[in-house]
Length: 275
Image (cartoon, rainbow, N blue to C red; front, side, top):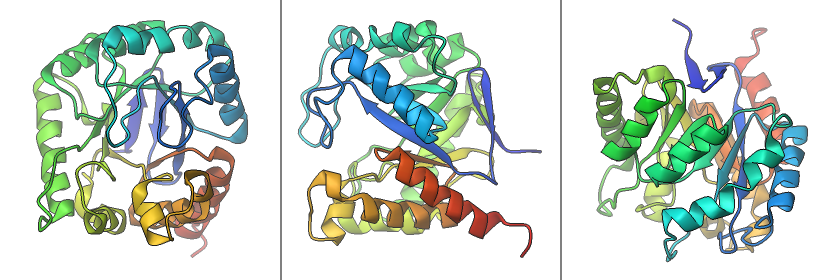
């Protein structure tokens, strides 16, 4: 059976093409680009720019989850996101993901045209109910659990993914609608983050899409002298290329144009039928 990721009205075949998910932070305080796209017009312009640069998916969020973040209410988060949806209607031709841990925001975003829920807290029962009520939406499920420093991160993440797949199946949500994210930078040590980048085959589920999101994160900075966030592109590409070689299907990135180019070369080397 062909592996696919079902994202609303979009069906993304897996295994021969690495998909690039462009990050759009409609926030004043995200760790890397906070404040740049808080204005709805600027946010929509950036979304369409990333589409033009070759992004396969757009991931839009209204709340930072950087270390030490202060949580907004769901009403405040939705107030930031809501004005952007009409500006993209009829113009965005790629799947639209909403990055939220609030079921209320996820439900409203899906009604407004989103195709995917990206929940960094791993889908609560309430969030699963939103997915049940929208039977085609994609579900990006992230691991965010504090791991003991001595823990085998790849094993812990794999077991978490299996548990989440069982939760989804119990609600009639197929594996094709799921995408698992190991949560690099969330509750892990530097060594555990490196392990997750290096050992994708030990983490992923055979029948479920796998997303890696290390763009500009602390694990990148730690390895290359902690340059400013916007100067971590080369390190990000190195980390993500290793993840592609391990079997990652989707990369979540800030720098879309460069990530697309790197992924296309990696795909050609890894998947070329001439070898």
